[in-house]
Image 1 (cartoon, rainbow, N blue to C red):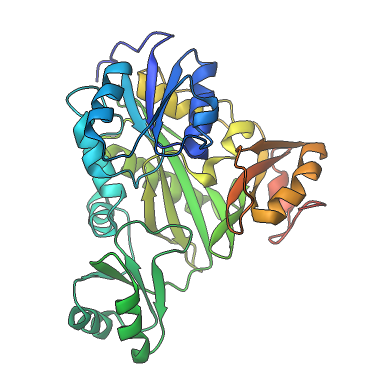
Image 2 (cartoon, helix red, strand yellow):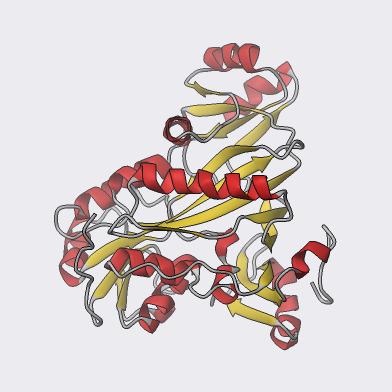
Length: 375
């Protein structure tokens, strides 16, 4: 594929969404000489605080979207729950990277499962559920326990229920919205592994090392880079995310979360076609972090190296506990701390993250539940 002419320094990247991922993307863009214009409903969102230009408007405001399109040179998004109609209103007026097709897969779990299977990534048994009767039929085929999820809008453990007995079926189906739903076999996984790939406008692909993730209260707590898994498992994770990036015909960055089974095999779980929480370690432990890589792809620059120059542990700083830990994170040696600019330290809210940098090879000696002093 011929490399397209990249946007020149001074061009403007439009970012749909004003959260911390948009913030860090805007900061990476500025370092490369690009302006970021953030479009979001909240005037004081983290991305708005560092943007060169801002549009504060609902995602459904077509007139505002058209004005936004006229003021930017390319559009990307920082979370996959941007309404599809929002991107549809922009496509044809300005290049959108990734495009509407990628967004549609990333925000619908049924389309996501079908896509993963077509891309050659193994997944657990699943079934689309449009009625309680269909749910009962699916449970009879898949068995219990199983996990019932919304097909849209779920993240950090939201929008799902574990079905353990037949008595759980009716209340879970009634509670979960919006419908339709998806039933997935309960996977007796030993852990979670994720991997991130960038794909440039010229079709080139850069893949980061797979990482090992640990959660607290359904929210990512720690990521260990590289993952402490057999070499074959790490290679499979990288190959899986490469397949995803290429099959999506992606221009941008994509994360793939995978269940790690006891025998070292992997099952694809979820796709995120944008920078991902489990990739924050790359900001400080790689020559080119995920946010810079995303910007490079979106503006048509050559991708940077995904080479890791240090082992790393990333910790999310969440809620009041994260706020209390911030002074120690800033003072700790070998730690690079990042704050997102959120005013309220609500329980479960991601306020920042900290990357501990270790010498290459040192991650293998770290205990599985290890936490540095103050963590």
